[in-house]
Amino acid sequence: MEAWQVAQLLEMLIMSGAVVGSLGIIAWAWVKRRPHSASGDIGRLTESVENLRESVEAMRVELGDVSDRLDFTERMLARVAESPQGAHKELPPR
Image (cartoon, rainbow, N blue to C red; front, side):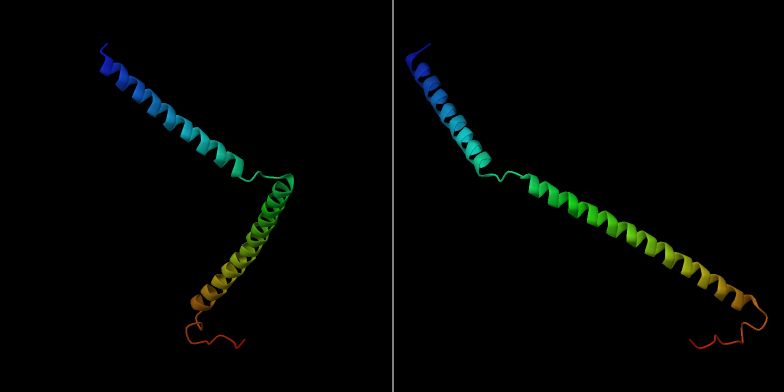
């Protein structure tokens, strides 16, 4: 190898080492600054998820009730429309 090739190889090794070392320092600093999840955080998250599950279950029940009421209303309206006097009969006031 020529002297200039050795010099270029050394320059590239030094630059590569500097880049890798800098990335290592940046990664280390990022890991040190990153907040660690404490057991209290996990407890609050678990409680929040449970509250969300309960809310979703309550909404499912309520949606089922609304669906039942809608089906009943549709059946009643169909009966009124099918009856011979249904076309001329007005619905009673609420």
